[in-house]
Image 1 (tube, rainbow, N blue to C red):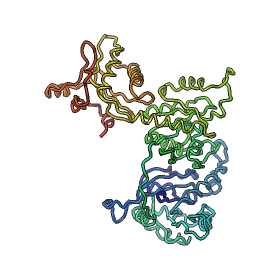
Image 2: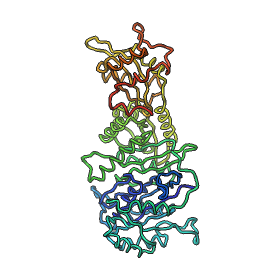
Image 3: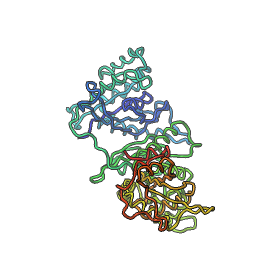
Image 4: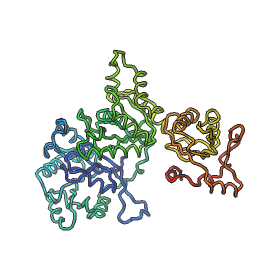
Length: 532
């Protein structure tokens, strides 16, 4: 059985997303006064602490899945019906209500959020009636008339202090019992709310939700097909798909089973140029997309095969390069593009597309390209297999001896050039971290290694070592005076290439390394690269 699920429902702007962030104690959902910010089901796994075991000495934490939903009737009730180009957002209403119904039907506990400062409105009463009559998702467990109904509890939001409590208790008139009270702004009665939720959530006897095998962030510009890909992977209408650009706002986590492997797919908002942003919600969406890239293992970078690569695509590609995440460049909508032709009338082929992509996205020259149709389900499984392979490459650790011999061989074939004829030397090399593979080279003078030579060095490393299609972080540093003294006093020497051959000892192994000497005086930003 799945872990217990809590669904948050209510009309627009009552504080549902703020409530999710309050309970999760983390900024997950986008919060803004604009109606209709949340549209899809936004879920997160949280741990509820036992109020009688605050230090978790007994291991009595309850793990639950908490789901935020869109405001019911949002575009009809609040008048935010048209976007900046005149698209009718009311057409999303049925999709939003479908997502709400799905959340209600699969929940073990329903939190009906009501604004205590606004009091009971006609729309609140309508939602309460729909919950009672099971017109907003089913509350019966087995779809049978006499089965147990999922409990509903009213949450009085925006109760910022004790003066608002009398207004909060008026919400008991809905007939769902005494309301839970909280304020996301002032954190008033937050601990009391969390303690009561712990008691309300049903006990779960199964194992905790296991970690997934891989996290993938699906990113791209607007209407590239990200949400369609998520739904195809999930095998259901998990997120809203619409021709209206910018439908997705939050980063939506969807867990997917692929044979014996599990994947967390993160759907992100479609991006566009900042100067085209209409409101701060788009800035929040950009921030969530950046955070999705940061917490994923592999990026699926979607390009629309029916349009040219734009400035937004290029900027997003640069963002991925700077993140040092493995990436699959995914060319979507091939079912439409395959029958097209270029400006010269030549038939479109995968090879021509590949040449075009390599020309436009030079910073991702090492990234593999996959051609798919998210709508038709073409090549989806194969693309995920490529992503797993990239994750494995990025998780690989190369022995120090092998790495030093590789570096020595590359430099002996072609070393850094210098106009003054000064010799550039590498004394020692070590891989200090995975994901991304991070290599530290101790050299005589980092300035003698130009950016062009660093690129050459990394390209050669990709050819020889198992990092062929993933980004590599390269740190160059000079030996310090302290390090030299430590080497002299200890009698242990860093391995330096032979003066004649330029090669390292063939017998060098992990045990021959004076690691303490090697770690001295690394740059400040290198401390985060080391594994514990």
